[in-house]
Length: 209
Image (cartoon, rainbow, N blue to C red):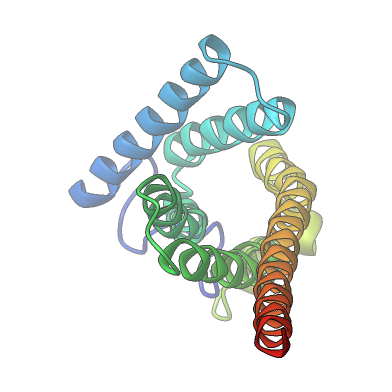
């Protein structure tokens, strides 16, 4: 994100990418479009609209960045988005298995990962995609500054920006779940403590009798 006019891979022409990058793009595109199909055919949840917009934007960005040759930016964005998912699946799996402690710890790790990857690093990468595109050895390539770019570039940056409010909404929902989990845990601890005190008081009264 720091050293290319349009973040292309140096030494490779447009519409070309290393084989491993092509495979990654195919997997990511298949995942998002299949997820969108499941979203439309499955039961609708409270965040249906946000998920639908997210999947459409992400799938379109994957296709556009690949066909236009902006694979370096695409790889960075996909990497940042994928950091959160494994931890979320671990939290869900261990919750369904009714394991103690692990689901809460995994979800806390989810919250931290989401904060770092999508709330801090993603906007920074988006900012670099807008301002850091001119190589130091070829300033004439973008004499018009940040506005001297193709319609495809502007559209991709706009779509990347459209993901920001969705990330903010999801992070707010994550914080609400964490708050509820912490409050329930404190409530359970207090309830257990009060129950122990009641039992001790009852036992003392029996002894007096």
